[in-house]
Image 1 (cartoon, rainbow, N blue to C red):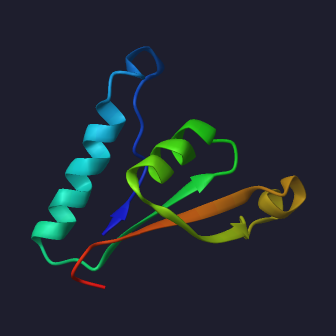
Image 2 (cartoon, rainbow, N blue to C red):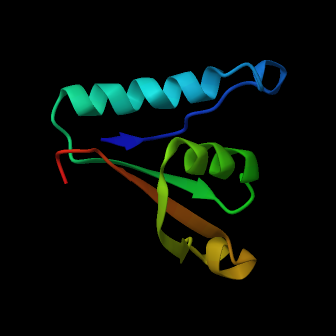
Length: 88
Protein backbone atom coordinates (compact mmCIF):
# COMPACT_ATOMS: atom_id res chain seq x y z
CA UNK A 1 0.00 0.00 0.00
CA UNK A 2 1.41 3.41 -0.93
CA UNK A 3 -0.01 6.65 0.46
CA UNK A 4 -0.11 9.36 -2.20
CA UNK A 5 -0.81 13.03 -1.78
CA UNK A 6 -2.38 12.99 1.66
CA UNK A 7 -2.98 16.57 2.74
CA UNK A 8 -5.23 18.63 4.95
CA UNK A 9 -6.21 22.20 4.09
CA UNK A 10 -4.27 24.71 6.20
CA UNK A 11 -7.31 26.04 8.07
CA UNK A 12 -8.14 22.50 9.24
CA UNK A 13 -4.67 21.52 10.41
CA UNK A 14 -4.07 20.84 14.07
CA UNK A 15 -7.41 19.09 14.51
CA UNK A 16 -6.06 15.54 14.21
CA UNK A 17 -7.43 14.97 10.71
CA UNK A 18 -4.11 13.94 9.14
CA UNK A 19 -3.37 11.64 12.07
CA UNK A 20 -6.80 10.01 11.71
CA UNK A 21 -6.32 9.61 7.93
CA UNK A 22 -2.90 8.00 8.38
CA UNK A 23 -4.17 5.66 11.10
CA UNK A 24 -7.09 4.69 8.87
CA UNK A 25 -4.65 3.84 6.06
CA UNK A 26 -2.55 1.76 8.49
CA UNK A 27 -5.65 -0.08 9.74
CA UNK A 28 -6.78 -0.69 6.15
CA UNK A 29 -3.38 -2.19 5.27
CA UNK A 30 -3.22 -4.26 8.46
CA UNK A 31 -6.69 -5.74 7.90
CA UNK A 32 -5.74 -6.78 4.38
CA UNK A 33 -2.49 -8.44 5.37
CA UNK A 34 -0.07 -5.91 3.90
CA UNK A 35 3.49 -6.07 5.20
CA UNK A 36 4.16 -2.32 5.17
CA UNK A 37 2.92 1.13 4.27
CA UNK A 38 5.36 3.31 2.31
CA UNK A 39 5.10 7.01 1.53
CA UNK A 40 7.23 9.78 0.06
CA UNK A 41 7.52 13.37 1.20
CA UNK A 42 9.41 16.41 -0.03
CA UNK A 43 12.25 17.87 2.01
CA UNK A 44 10.21 20.99 2.87
CA UNK A 45 7.24 19.16 4.41
CA UNK A 46 8.51 19.31 7.98
CA UNK A 47 5.07 19.06 9.61
CA UNK A 48 4.24 15.96 7.59
CA UNK A 49 7.58 14.37 8.43
CA UNK A 50 7.03 15.02 12.15
CA UNK A 51 3.55 13.46 11.93
CA UNK A 52 4.81 10.34 10.16
CA UNK A 53 7.62 9.87 12.65
CA UNK A 54 5.20 10.39 15.56
CA UNK A 55 2.98 7.65 14.13
CA UNK A 56 5.90 5.22 13.94
CA UNK A 57 7.03 5.57 10.33
CA UNK A 58 10.80 5.24 9.89
CA UNK A 59 12.94 6.97 7.31
CA UNK A 60 13.70 4.35 4.73
CA UNK A 61 15.45 6.12 1.87
CA UNK A 62 16.41 9.59 0.63
CA UNK A 63 17.07 10.58 -2.96
CA UNK A 64 17.19 13.61 -5.22
CA UNK A 65 14.21 13.85 -7.55
CA UNK A 66 15.49 12.26 -10.80
CA UNK A 67 14.55 15.13 -13.11
CA UNK A 68 16.50 18.10 -14.44
CA UNK A 69 14.71 20.38 -12.00
CA UNK A 70 15.22 17.96 -9.12
CA UNK A 71 18.95 17.81 -9.73
CA UNK A 72 19.23 21.57 -10.27
CA UNK A 73 17.26 22.43 -7.11
CA UNK A 74 18.59 19.47 -5.12
CA UNK A 75 14.95 18.52 -4.46
CA UNK A 76 15.21 15.69 -1.94
CA UNK A 77 12.50 13.08 -1.44
CA UNK A 78 12.32 11.07 1.78
CA UNK A 79 10.66 7.67 1.73
CA UNK A 80 9.06 6.57 4.98
CA UNK A 81 8.10 3.00 5.81
CA UNK A 82 5.80 1.59 8.48
CA UNK A 83 6.27 -2.15 8.93
CA UNK A 84 3.05 -3.69 10.11
CA UNK A 85 3.45 -5.92 13.19
CA UNK A 86 3.24 -9.65 12.61
CA UNK A 87 3.63 -9.35 8.85
CA UNK A 88 7.26 -8.31 8.30
